[in-house]
Length: 387
Image (cartoon, rainbow, N blue to C red; front, top):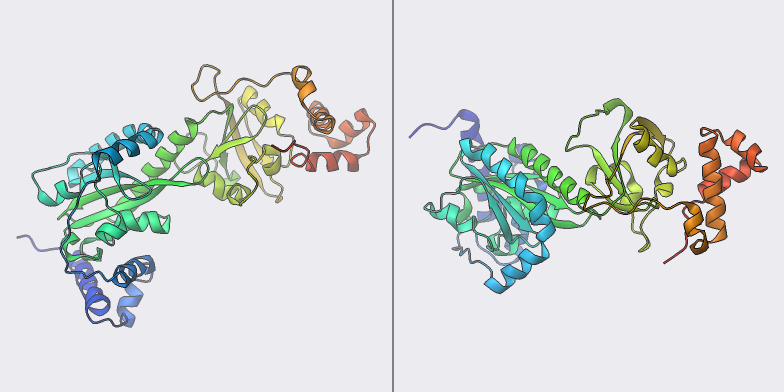
């Protein structure tokens, strides 16, 4: 048997010592171990949850699949997620094949929905987990990348004995949560190997794959305008899994956003009314100008209400696209259905656009003071009708 590289041997020794201290002796980690595991608090918390449930690291495990009728319901309920993930699972599985890892997609409860890559079902440990319908939640199999990613809502990496149960010490795995267009956790993406070398870089790889799945889910939602967001210093024209994506309907309402956009625009993550946020709540300029960016095919620096600016590139969804909504109607066709105050606000926005963004010019054209125009622009969200 080939000797393990020094780093791998040290890692396994650290894991064994931590297990002895926390799981067998019930004592605290030594200072040296605590320093080595400074970023692994989530792992220790998972071990503690398993102990609190009365579980023993040495007890046997059985990987039972869920009943067929429950699996059928889960597949139907997660059809959009499965459709968005299919191509990425195939791509990820092919990439992992040389190092003998494979991919798993689960729902938010840890139930396997799909697999990807080369899966050797003649290997018992592989067959145990790489089956659609198997429950791989923390409550069922203890600490794993799947349970940790779903609990912590962040990418994680686990190697061998970092799994709570000794039975699972043959696995090495990375996982990342999958968040939907409204920010809800839909499931997670996992890559796992059985009795393989440690590859902590897979945490970054699986996180990137998860972002691409999230973007596919977002773009499958009905929308009229797609905005690509980046901070000015990091702007790149080419698409990337780390860029912010925000989708709007024809009236400027937010239909969905990916996690990067939610991080750039914190208002998207705040609890609020059932009514969706509006672009006017996020950007400190007339929201209609975002549609102009798409028609002009240009990127621009767009101000936020915080005083910061984002680099924004816009793209109109084609009318024939399954995710597209009808193009905006002229105001004259919908005027009868809109409150007078909303129409006044839209006219002010139009005047500012016609003036090239110069509020003073728009104010003179409208016969209003600049203060009135600024006030009406800032009240865009409150002018929208409720319901």
